[in-house]
Image (cartoon, rainbow, N blue to C red; front, side, top):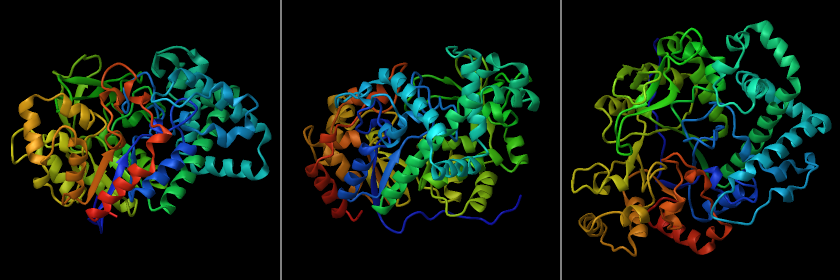
Length: 506
């Protein structure tokens, strides 16, 4: 394929933003949501002279597993982020049943109660929605026809076949449903028409609320940046609906899965549950699934940050069933052809990419070919090597600087875990001490030549690793951190605004 070469030019001025996931917003209903807490955070960003709100993927996940790789749809929204108060007129039950006092932790046990209330709201919407609301819903269904029915069917089918089972769809579904026989699908969809429509309504709720939040943020001068996982879970609506685009066996079970070799954050090779992409087939069909995915995201976010960008150069593939990736191999991906197609197909895309210093040279070549900004992570800088690209004096303009990212700890915990020699190196470099190191590391990032700086909210409120934002072990620590409304105070926003304006990022 031949395309016009497009190089992305993202910035005409220096900018900064804050990283905070939706789940960590202040909320009275379990995890953070798209309600009042989200709008207060946008107001806080505006008062702090910020330009970006970066968040993790809004995709539905299994809260008992390690996000973001457990997403079971690349298109759908996480219904637990729906603001119950915005759909309260469709809820007959008492919302006080799921309300909780403001705490630093989200109460995940209440998600089951929220699930019941959400389904109640969806059922009542089906029966009570006004003519205008029904038209709006039908319009959403039409615009989302590529993925919505398949996703809603997938969720309804899994509950129908074995609600409490942990088995994947290839075990649960009858062969006709598994292989997507049209007659079998039509029959079961008729039987489960109510359950499927409930799931469609819930997605309508989610995206209506998310779109309203985006409008509000954009009106305040805030752009939404979203992390987009390169891989998705095997047990997902996308794998079931688009089996040809993944490396599966004839019975739809996994053949090759994606893995990762050791990096800064992993002590040993690790095999994931994500099926490897069949790039030959994807290319043959003009990257249809990816193009649709990015096209949908483009409607709801302003900047797409691609996680595991090196997957567009090559992926580490292992046979299904391997516990670790020692027996895997690198398999090339058509990254240049892919992005040439996508950037010609979807105009004015803003893309950031996850890139680490230990990635192979061909990854940086692909990044630079399209002028995508990569990352610099300050907590990876202090290894006594003055040429370390994560040190501020080695930054370039076209990059995004993070003090830390979702996969490692906060500044306070990071510094506290170091030996005296490493601490001295950091203190000398930043001309600081242990009492002021958090703010001075932020200052160093903001004063750097980099076009973009993103600071995790946990660093601004100076919390430790007990409130980390991403799961690194087989527990739920990431998704239970939550801001308190008192964190979003005027003094902090004034301090952030001052340092932002001081270094020309407002």
